[in-house]
Length: 314
Image 1 (tube, rainbow, N blue to C red):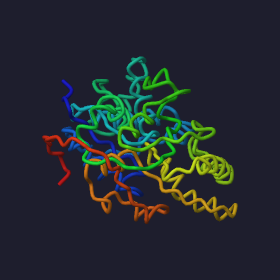
Image 2: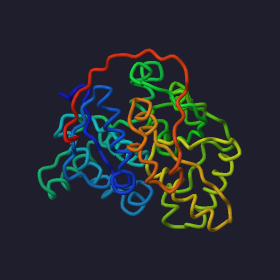
Image 3: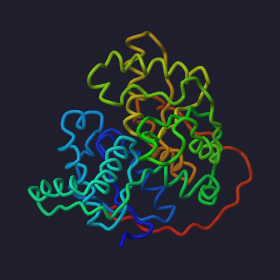
Image 4: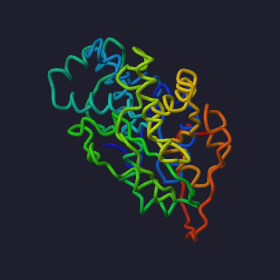
């Protein structure tokens, strides 16, 4: 039986290597909310849907199924904070559940790797789903100790919502749950043109054609900057890498002056729950190193929060 209030924490590649502050913020948030996070020993790349799936769909599914099998040994649903990881793992998990013949083939391959077997006993969850729906904008206010007075350009990304028949989170054309969530934290969500377009990194575009990737990013950043946000709010370390480091590249190529901080959902939530600004880690990012959240001055009811320990969190 799958453990309640417990997740197998899938780190992915980008977060631990480039943005470990997102990992620490996620652990902080989930602990405050009373969830337990279990480690996934020997987990690998998800693997990335925009690259690996294009070359060999079968091996892509085997690698993903191995990660799922590791979580199944924990008897705990997977939690990821990355749209790409979410896309791969949920796609493969649901496909294998509906295709017994493919599941058998995958398990034959897994036997060659050791003690691994995909069973189809768990779900794949995204932090945006947990915070945005399972906790929600009303309930989250019981756990925060301050709100941020700011304006944010909300970026959903591609793999979080599409294909909607598999994700089943929200409308892929008119989603609102992230806007509702940030506004519960005091942040005003600003509207901007082409809000739901790609950041320019997905689908292997960044790896295959950097110039096209930067052109897409430049256009999106321009629309965002026109709305005068204090920061970009995202739910994916890969999108964050594109927005953060990509701004520098775009400025070099086009002579622009973009300098917009990029903040993951876990980082903003952690600050509102009381995490020190230094530990939010913006000083380690390419843009927004000097950005400081401004506390929204309004009465807030303090509540007692019972915390649970997180395995391996120290």
